[in-house]
Image (cartoon, rainbow, N blue to C red):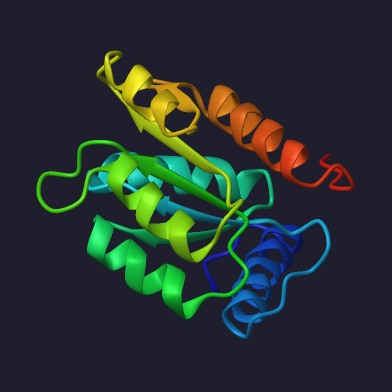
Length: 157
């Protein structure tokens, strides 16, 4: 038993692995968008990543700001930064977004938080806000909207 319920599941998993491999090699296939997801809560990070992957986004993950900076510096083809605001220690999400934007002007940054007062802080820096808790559908919709505004030629299913 190989752990797959059916052939299409096997193809999907291998397809996702190939997309990640291509992304790691610096290839960004038209229509395959790469999201850097930064969230210190592993359960939230896992659920958000799974939700985005269901929509065929390639997701790079980091658990804090410093790790996210390392990932961003090692990847040339990130299409969107999705970051939690409060990550325990180190940089907060707005600080992280600002630092990455100095190296990647124009990169869309979406800040998420369970604290609604963070929205104004993110807005001051020109960063849209996503309130927690959110549904998988609202997360995917918000990410699609941001990426579509970045590149009007992007088409989503």
